[in-house]
Image 1 (cartoon, rainbow, N blue to C red):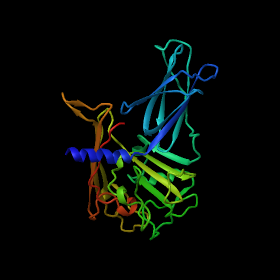
Image 2: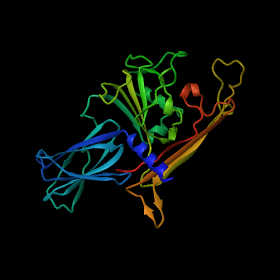
Image 3: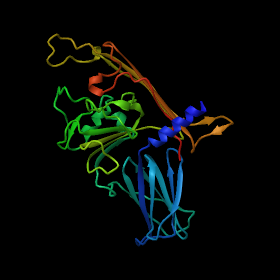
Image 4: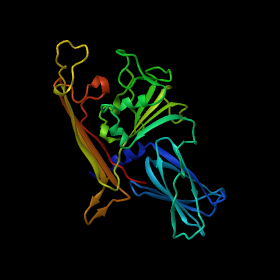
Length: 330
């Protein structure tokens, strides 16, 4: 059991897709404060990193797990400044912290310190994170998120050669897109579109969807048109989860416009499952808050047509029995 847990930890850590954060600490006149100390804390896992600024008052943090971070700066003779910055996949967030004259024991929350525009690279990209993933009506088809990006259009209808996940990005070929899950290729190399590890992916376990349509960096590749990245959830300091059933039934649907029978087509799909994660906690023995976390999810389905879950031709999904992940903060 111990060996299996260690293997799961190693696999998940290497699969992380990360982001970065850059910043500068200045005084009221805009001059650099070269004596400032920086602390970066994940609001989800409690992970803390600390460092000093350079001679220009600048600092940077690389290889950060995606999520929300609290960044603070303090220096002798100045009040402590705190700001919250989101870190997304493949992006570098920028923050400028203005310190006011005062005591270090005083804390000033800085608003507007984070630059929403990623100025560190020239990628044309779009991210969907947090509750928006569950609230945007895509029918639990993660590939549908790509249509939110400018310049993206579906391939021609009833194309027999292109599967789910095939789309035209800025005039590129429908089969020219590269799709990954936590950095693992999920592109069907024979019929294009999605395949591989995307098959058992639980929609409720997705934390971020990133679509890069142009000017992606050298770390991406394989296909030349666009990059679609799915990042899955991991455990946090707070126990969180979801129990669901995605139910479709022809009794609640209208008939198709060209259906002359007067009755809707038979449709009975039940997609059910859960996802849950939190810190590793063993009463009186071990408290993994800020250190060790776990996350697991399950999804299964039943259909009157014999295909589990939603129509596999539309989503690329069939039976989705299990997808597990365990993370350790480093």
